[in-house]
Amino acid sequence: MIVRSDITVKDVPEPRLVFFHSGCQRESTVALRCHAVEQAIVTMRTRFMDPLTLQDLANAAQFSPFHFNRVFRSMTGVSPGVFLASIRLEQAKELLLTTRRSVTDICFDVGYSSLGTFTSRFTQLVGIPPTRLRHLAKEQFMQTSTADILTMLSCIGPSKNASTSAGITGTIEVTRPFHGIIYIGAFASPLPQGRPVACAVLTEPGRFHMCSVPDGKYYLFAAAMEDTQDLLSLLIGGMKLRGRLGNYSVLVYNGMAKQAVNILLAPANWADPPLLIALPWLLLSQFLQVQPVVVE
Image 1: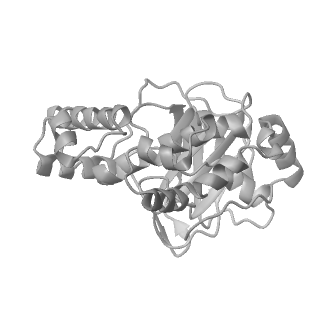
Image 2 (image 1 turned 90 degrees about the horizontal axis):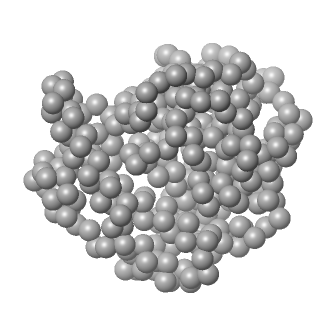
Protein backbone atom coordinates (compact mmCIF):
# COMPACT_ATOMS: atom_id res chain seq x y z
CA MET A 1 0.00 0.00 0.00
CA ILE A 2 1.20 3.54 -0.79
CA VAL A 3 0.62 6.26 1.77
CA ARG A 4 1.26 10.00 1.71
CA SER A 5 1.19 12.16 4.80
CA ASP A 6 2.86 15.05 6.64
CA ILE A 7 6.63 14.88 6.96
CA THR A 8 7.85 13.95 10.43
CA VAL A 9 11.40 14.92 11.39
CA LYS A 10 12.67 14.03 14.84
CA ASP A 11 15.75 15.52 16.46
CA VAL A 12 17.39 12.69 18.36
CA PRO A 13 20.95 11.87 19.40
CA GLU A 14 22.87 9.39 17.25
CA PRO A 15 23.88 6.66 16.98
CA ARG A 16 20.70 4.90 18.02
CA LEU A 17 20.49 1.65 19.97
CA VAL A 18 19.39 -1.13 17.66
CA PHE A 19 19.79 -4.16 19.90
CA PHE A 20 17.07 -6.15 21.58
CA HIS A 21 16.76 -6.07 25.36
CA SER A 22 18.98 -8.80 26.78
CA GLY A 23 16.97 -9.16 29.99
CA CYS A 24 19.46 -7.36 32.20
CA GLN A 25 18.46 -4.18 34.03
CA ARG A 26 21.86 -3.11 35.35
CA GLU A 27 23.23 -0.30 33.14
CA SER A 28 26.86 -1.32 33.55
CA THR A 29 26.12 -4.88 32.43
CA VAL A 30 24.04 -3.68 29.47
CA ALA A 31 26.89 -1.39 28.40
CA LEU A 32 29.38 -4.26 28.72
CA ARG A 33 27.19 -6.53 26.59
CA CYS A 34 26.68 -3.85 23.95
CA HIS A 35 30.43 -3.33 23.74
CA ALA A 36 31.03 -7.07 23.45
CA VAL A 37 28.51 -7.44 20.62
CA GLU A 38 29.99 -4.38 18.91
CA GLN A 39 33.46 -5.89 18.97
CA ALA A 40 32.15 -9.14 17.54
CA ILE A 41 30.23 -7.44 14.70
CA VAL A 42 33.20 -5.21 13.86
CA THR A 43 35.34 -8.36 13.69
CA MET A 44 32.78 -9.98 11.37
CA ARG A 45 32.75 -6.95 9.07
CA THR A 46 36.54 -6.66 8.88
CA ARG A 47 37.40 -10.37 8.76
CA PHE A 48 34.37 -11.88 6.98
CA MET A 49 36.71 -13.60 4.47
CA ASP A 50 38.43 -15.58 7.24
CA PRO A 51 37.18 -18.93 8.62
CA LEU A 52 35.94 -17.31 11.83
CA THR A 53 34.86 -19.65 14.61
CA LEU A 54 32.65 -19.03 17.62
CA GLN A 55 35.84 -19.00 19.69
CA ASP A 56 37.34 -16.27 17.48
CA LEU A 57 34.29 -14.06 17.90
CA ALA A 58 34.08 -14.76 21.62
CA ASN A 59 37.72 -13.74 21.94
CA ALA A 60 36.98 -10.45 20.20
CA ALA A 61 34.11 -9.88 22.64
CA GLN A 62 36.28 -11.01 25.58
CA PHE A 63 33.60 -13.49 26.68
CA SER A 64 33.58 -17.24 26.97
CA PRO A 65 32.11 -18.91 23.85
CA PHE A 66 29.01 -20.11 25.74
CA HIS A 67 28.32 -16.73 27.36
CA PHE A 68 29.05 -14.83 24.15
CA ASN A 69 26.70 -17.00 22.10
CA ARG A 70 23.88 -16.50 24.61
CA VAL A 71 24.40 -12.72 24.87
CA PHE A 72 24.71 -12.26 21.09
CA ARG A 73 21.49 -14.19 20.47
CA SER A 74 19.60 -12.24 23.13
CA MET A 75 20.69 -8.85 21.76
CA THR A 76 20.47 -9.45 18.00
CA GLY A 77 17.81 -12.16 17.83
CA VAL A 78 20.04 -14.53 15.81
CA SER A 79 23.18 -16.59 16.34
CA PRO A 80 26.65 -15.21 15.57
CA GLY A 81 26.91 -17.66 12.67
CA VAL A 82 23.72 -16.40 11.03
CA PHE A 83 24.80 -12.77 11.41
CA LEU A 84 28.22 -13.56 9.92
CA ALA A 85 26.62 -15.40 6.97
CA SER A 86 24.48 -12.33 6.28
CA ILE A 87 27.53 -10.07 6.24
CA ARG A 88 29.31 -12.43 3.84
CA LEU A 89 26.36 -12.46 1.45
CA GLU A 90 26.12 -8.67 1.66
CA GLN A 91 29.77 -8.45 0.60
CA ALA A 92 29.17 -10.99 -2.17
CA LYS A 93 26.31 -8.88 -3.52
CA GLU A 94 28.60 -5.85 -3.72
CA LEU A 95 31.37 -7.81 -5.45
CA LEU A 96 28.93 -9.20 -8.00
CA LEU A 97 27.82 -5.68 -8.91
CA THR A 98 31.16 -3.87 -8.84
CA THR A 99 33.72 -6.40 -10.15
CA ARG A 100 34.14 -8.91 -12.97
CA ARG A 101 35.27 -11.69 -10.67
CA SER A 102 33.59 -15.02 -11.30
CA VAL A 103 30.88 -16.28 -9.00
CA THR A 104 33.23 -19.06 -7.92
CA ASP A 105 35.98 -16.60 -6.98
CA ILE A 106 33.53 -14.41 -5.10
CA CYS A 107 32.25 -17.45 -3.24
CA PHE A 108 35.74 -18.07 -1.84
CA ASP A 109 36.48 -14.35 -1.43
CA VAL A 110 33.70 -13.98 1.13
CA GLY A 111 34.58 -17.05 3.17
CA TYR A 112 32.52 -19.87 1.64
CA SER A 113 34.21 -23.17 0.81
CA SER A 114 31.35 -24.64 -1.26
CA LEU A 115 29.97 -22.98 -4.40
CA GLY A 116 26.73 -24.96 -4.12
CA THR A 117 26.13 -23.83 -0.54
CA PHE A 118 26.97 -20.23 -1.43
CA THR A 119 24.63 -20.16 -4.45
CA SER A 120 21.78 -21.78 -2.55
CA ARG A 121 22.01 -19.44 0.44
CA PHE A 122 22.47 -16.36 -1.73
CA THR A 123 19.37 -17.22 -3.76
CA GLN A 124 17.29 -17.95 -0.68
CA LEU A 125 18.29 -14.92 1.39
CA VAL A 126 18.90 -12.25 -1.25
CA GLY A 127 15.96 -13.35 -3.36
CA ILE A 128 17.74 -13.89 -6.68
CA PRO A 129 20.63 -16.15 -7.85
CA PRO A 130 24.11 -14.56 -8.03
CA THR A 131 24.41 -14.80 -11.81
CA ARG A 132 20.90 -13.46 -12.34
CA LEU A 133 21.63 -10.49 -10.09
CA ARG A 134 24.71 -9.62 -12.13
CA HIS A 135 22.76 -9.83 -15.38
CA LEU A 136 19.85 -7.89 -13.94
CA ALA A 137 22.16 -5.02 -13.02
CA LYS A 138 22.77 -4.47 -16.75
CA GLU A 139 19.07 -4.10 -17.58
CA GLN A 140 17.83 -0.67 -18.66
CA PHE A 141 15.23 -0.39 -15.89
CA MET A 142 18.03 -0.40 -13.30
CA GLN A 143 18.75 3.16 -14.41
CA THR A 144 15.29 4.19 -13.18
CA SER A 145 15.62 7.23 -10.95
CA THR A 146 13.79 8.01 -7.75
CA ALA A 147 11.96 10.81 -9.55
CA ASP A 148 10.68 8.37 -12.20
CA ILE A 149 9.53 5.92 -9.52
CA LEU A 150 7.75 8.69 -7.63
CA THR A 151 5.91 9.58 -10.83
CA MET A 152 4.85 5.94 -11.30
CA LEU A 153 3.64 5.75 -7.71
CA SER A 154 1.65 8.96 -8.05
CA CYS A 155 -0.18 7.42 -11.00
CA ILE A 156 -1.04 4.30 -8.98
CA GLY A 157 -2.31 6.24 -5.98
CA PRO A 158 -3.29 4.89 -2.55
CA SER A 159 -5.35 1.74 -2.30
CA LYS A 160 -9.01 2.52 -1.79
CA ASN A 161 -9.88 -0.92 -0.51
CA ALA A 162 -7.36 -1.12 2.29
CA SER A 163 -8.75 -1.39 5.78
CA THR A 164 -7.72 1.35 8.17
CA SER A 165 -7.62 -0.97 11.20
CA ALA A 166 -6.62 -4.48 10.10
CA GLY A 167 -2.97 -5.39 9.64
CA ILE A 168 -0.09 -3.28 10.96
CA THR A 169 -0.15 0.50 11.19
CA GLY A 170 2.54 2.88 12.33
CA THR A 171 4.60 5.98 11.71
CA ILE A 172 7.98 6.57 10.09
CA GLU A 173 10.08 9.43 11.45
CA VAL A 174 13.46 10.71 10.25
CA THR A 175 16.41 12.34 11.97
CA ARG A 176 17.01 14.80 9.13
CA PRO A 177 15.08 16.20 6.15
CA PHE A 178 14.54 13.51 3.54
CA HIS A 179 13.25 13.35 -0.04
CA GLY A 180 12.70 10.02 -1.73
CA ILE A 181 10.93 6.71 -1.15
CA ILE A 182 10.69 4.67 2.05
CA TYR A 183 10.20 0.90 2.08
CA ILE A 184 8.85 -0.93 5.14
CA GLY A 185 8.81 -4.71 5.45
CA ALA A 186 7.54 -7.15 8.08
CA PHE A 187 9.76 -10.23 8.42
CA ALA A 188 9.41 -13.45 10.37
CA SER A 189 13.12 -13.28 11.31
CA PRO A 190 15.04 -10.65 13.30
CA LEU A 191 17.17 -10.29 10.16
CA PRO A 192 15.53 -8.89 7.02
CA GLN A 193 16.12 -11.91 4.80
CA GLY A 194 14.08 -13.30 1.93
CA ARG A 195 10.69 -11.91 1.04
CA PRO A 196 8.77 -9.92 3.65
CA VAL A 197 5.44 -11.21 4.89
CA ALA A 198 3.93 -7.77 4.26
CA CYS A 199 5.19 -4.41 3.09
CA ALA A 200 4.36 -0.76 2.54
CA VAL A 201 5.82 2.06 0.46
CA LEU A 202 5.84 5.72 1.51
CA THR A 203 6.65 8.72 -0.65
CA GLU A 204 7.54 10.69 2.46
CA PRO A 205 7.86 10.08 6.23
CA GLY A 206 4.59 9.70 8.11
CA ARG A 207 1.94 7.05 8.64
CA PHE A 208 2.05 3.65 6.95
CA HIS A 209 -0.33 0.70 6.79
CA MET A 210 0.24 -2.96 5.94
CA CYS A 211 -2.94 -4.86 5.23
CA SER A 212 -3.62 -8.61 4.95
CA VAL A 213 -0.94 -9.62 7.46
CA PRO A 214 -1.21 -13.27 8.63
CA ASP A 215 -1.30 -13.91 12.37
CA GLY A 216 2.16 -14.25 13.87
CA LYS A 217 5.16 -12.42 15.35
CA TYR A 218 7.04 -10.08 13.02
CA TYR A 219 10.05 -7.79 12.97
CA LEU A 220 9.73 -4.51 11.10
CA PHE A 221 12.51 -2.91 9.08
CA ALA A 222 12.50 0.28 7.02
CA ALA A 223 15.00 1.77 4.57
CA ALA A 224 14.96 4.85 2.37
CA MET A 225 15.91 5.45 -1.26
CA GLU A 226 17.08 9.04 -1.59
CA ASP A 227 16.11 11.18 -4.57
CA THR A 228 19.75 11.24 -5.73
CA GLN A 229 19.83 7.46 -6.29
CA ASP A 230 18.78 5.18 -9.10
CA LEU A 231 18.06 1.48 -8.66
CA LEU A 232 21.56 0.34 -9.63
CA SER A 233 23.34 2.73 -7.28
CA LEU A 234 20.93 1.62 -4.59
CA LEU A 235 21.87 -2.04 -5.03
CA ILE A 236 25.57 -1.19 -5.00
CA GLY A 237 25.72 1.45 -2.30
CA GLY A 238 22.75 0.43 -0.23
CA MET A 239 20.28 2.57 1.64
CA LYS A 240 21.90 5.18 3.86
CA LEU A 241 18.83 5.72 6.07
CA ARG A 242 17.59 2.66 7.93
CA GLY A 243 15.35 1.84 10.84
CA ARG A 244 13.82 -1.03 12.75
CA LEU A 245 11.26 -1.44 15.47
CA GLY A 246 13.74 -0.93 18.28
CA ASN A 247 13.77 -3.74 20.84
CA TYR A 248 10.39 -5.21 19.97
CA SER A 249 8.53 -7.49 17.62
CA VAL A 250 4.93 -7.02 16.49
CA LEU A 251 2.27 -9.57 17.33
CA VAL A 252 -0.59 -9.85 14.85
CA TYR A 253 -3.70 -11.63 16.15
CA ASN A 254 -6.95 -12.02 14.25
CA GLY A 255 -5.38 -10.07 11.41
CA MET A 256 -4.55 -7.02 13.50
CA ALA A 257 -1.65 -5.66 15.55
CA LYS A 258 -2.77 -4.45 18.96
CA GLN A 259 -0.83 -1.17 18.83
CA ALA A 260 0.52 1.21 16.23
CA VAL A 261 4.30 1.18 15.90
CA ASN A 262 6.92 3.86 15.36
CA ILE A 263 10.15 3.47 13.37
CA LEU A 264 12.92 6.05 13.33
CA LEU A 265 15.07 6.31 10.20
CA ALA A 266 18.66 7.35 10.87
CA PRO A 267 22.03 7.00 9.08
CA ALA A 268 23.19 3.39 8.90
CA ASN A 269 25.77 2.29 11.45
CA TRP A 270 27.89 -0.76 12.27
CA ALA A 271 25.15 -2.46 14.30
CA ASP A 272 22.50 -2.46 11.57
CA PRO A 273 21.81 -5.98 10.28
CA PRO A 274 22.62 -6.50 6.59
CA LEU A 275 19.68 -5.74 4.31
CA LEU A 276 20.09 -8.89 2.24
CA ILE A 277 16.78 -8.41 0.56
CA ALA A 278 17.07 -5.41 -1.74
CA LEU A 279 14.03 -3.63 -0.34
CA PRO A 280 13.34 -1.99 -3.72
CA TRP A 281 12.21 -5.46 -4.84
CA LEU A 282 9.09 -4.70 -2.84
CA LEU A 283 8.43 -1.86 -5.24
CA LEU A 284 9.66 -3.63 -8.35
CA SER A 285 7.68 -6.81 -7.83
CA GLN A 286 4.46 -5.18 -6.62
CA PHE A 287 4.24 -1.99 -8.64
CA LEU A 288 6.61 -2.19 -11.62
CA GLN A 289 5.86 -5.83 -12.53
CA VAL A 290 9.49 -6.98 -12.27
CA GLN A 291 9.55 -10.44 -10.76
CA PRO A 292 12.76 -11.52 -8.99
CA VAL A 293 13.41 -15.23 -8.56
CA VAL A 294 12.67 -16.32 -5.01
CA VAL A 295 13.28 -19.65 -3.32
CA GLU A 296 10.55 -20.38 -0.80
